[in-house]
Figure 1: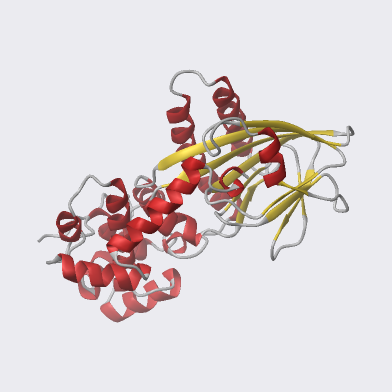
Figure 2: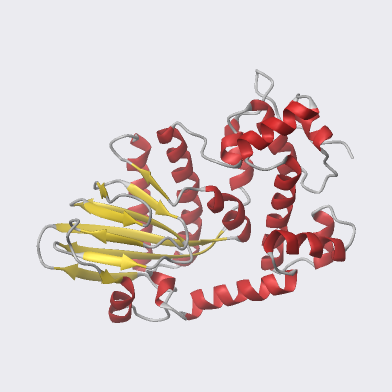
Length: 342
């Protein structure tokens, strides 16, 4: 099979943004839950972490954010913060303020099925006011395994440093306000806006940090490695080898293999396998394709061969993986725990 070659820039290499788009185009938001908090000093809220990606924006007074493993940070009004799924954290009006568990606030103020409806509440001692907008977004399997997994524990986009942050902040606030009105189509609107927020927050983070991060994000900074990544993403089922990928990159086999591992952190074939498995996991969770077809699309000649590779990647058989994810989604939609809407 002939390799699919990407469109080239005038210099003969695809722009990193093109690969970025190829990766993020596969990400889908399954579900989004929003919240608006009216907070007055002194106040504090503590979360054990939530299963979705959490995006927060504050207006009026600043606040302090404490995340495990990091020093307390003063977050200014208009700054956007996104935390990876499962990240414990505390938000405080001042470093010395005590924190109330989010679970207690949810139990007191949530209306209807947890994890389904917007959450609104007021909390604090009546002093200086902070208005908090948040969106918890559950992303599809590919996004969880490929995108969120290579991000730092949290991303902060400062409004003072990047004009785009202001635009994203208004979009974030508009998302929350729109869901509170619960007009026709609000659930779908929230989910799609979640995808746009993720894409633009990542772009803003990369611009602000002047860094390509880790994993495939770091590989985007190298034209040859970016070409090989593009090739794998556009034809994941092709019988790629280190030699054919090196040809896509315009490098010798040895130089390509060394450079890919140094930048991306894994071998080219390990990356390809993980990419295929993440795509397969997304297809499995969608439930619209037979496993034999999923195996073929991933480049495997039999379901048995694919299942062995999937177990090596995930630690679970395809059927066990689906049972695990079904339980995860049931916890979100049925409100099996307060973590679903922290």
